Length: 493
Length: 100
Image 1 (spheres, rainbow over the protein chains, first blue to last red):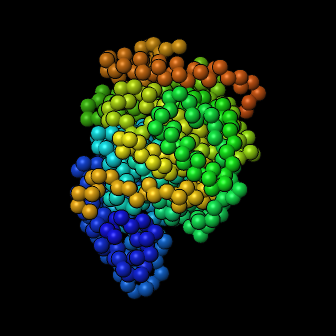
Image 2: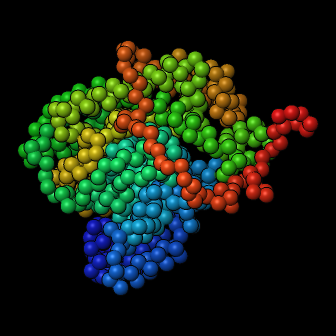
Image 3: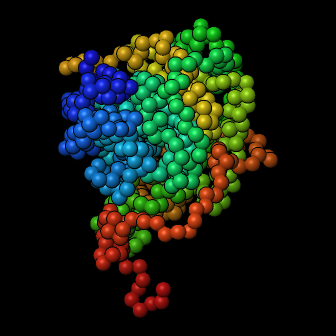
């Protein structure tokens, strides 16, 4: 089997048996990037020399038989909003940070290094993670490996595309309103948003701090579990990091959850849902039914339209505050021409930020401004509690909730670019989980007639990632979607 | 309720974003569409519902007030567009001779 057709778990085992060297794994990954990335544009930065040095160092330790980390020698990609010291830039898809070198590593990057992973590069994203298509990037769009005329989803589109095109077996993304799950769905890979607080946000460039959460993208459920295992856990430097024990996700992965009650919310099957997506998602739920699961119709009255409305007040409000730090003084871009200090701020920010970021800063500033604060921001926080209640009540009756991750498969590049609201509605089924802090995943559940992947979204309560992964694995064992490869991978494989 | 061009200029200024004339019009249209959408929240009766800022209970986290290593001056200034003598350098903000 070609190196990059192996799962991360298989690669890890082969590396330990010394049937595979970290050097060969790294070369395979670099070669795939060189061959495919001119078309896909998943990466914004790689450092081949550093990758080779690192792989050689890990090989030396593996050869010596010394203790190695969980991901020893496995190539991993990191979304470009996670700080990497020593070499790779951290740009967040923004001109205002283009080429910025972080002076420290994000917690997740420290954890990847401690696990002896080989970080091959940084992946493209919507600017500051604001978007659902990876088109809002100063580096240009990423293309979906299944059809390069379509978007990969976003904002973690670079990470999802890199995994789907088999350039790397694993990648980290971040999910504020669906930014791991939706690109996971559109690219036909597994994408998981853990419970808020499960993975430290230290060194994750802040977008909406009460919603942002880092998680894995991988081709299989087991690989997602492996990467989550490597990065989950308490970190005192993130005051919202939760000190809950991290279970051994892989040890229990193949234990089915039985009995299993699946909540199917009617709000997730509305008129805007693409009929092919609906059919594939219902078939996937049918697989669980045949495995003995019981379906329960539930109501989540606030979890879709109202959640989007709430999200587009809460997230921009937090963003408008978080992005005040880009002032042309401390780091990043400063406009060369300016009349005075205020003019320097205004020109640096208007030249450095793209339109979507400007829209959200203005929207957030509006919602927080005098006279509107109670009507918008405070109102949104009250509705946020109603969203949370919807899920709390549902989880009293069911073990998990299932539905589509995205109402449509991958859409054509440019289609939603001039219509921000249409783009925002791409996250209709995913934002609820962020508002409520619960765990969620998207797993591949088939392909449309046009050959585009479709994702099944599964949601479970807080800190039940082990159960969420087991439930996902139950389906994966019955199906074979993960073995399908995009046509662009076939050429030289 | 839409956003007028004046309101857009006001929030842009508060957010320290300079807008060209044609941008004001474009953003006024787009932001109005979005604000119209979020206005559906007013249909909901939230009387007596406590606002939820964080979906998980968040506690203050305290640590002993002891010195720890942080970024060096060079590291902290390393990404600055303009720095000199261990400081960030910015355009003049105080007039000559006037009090601060």
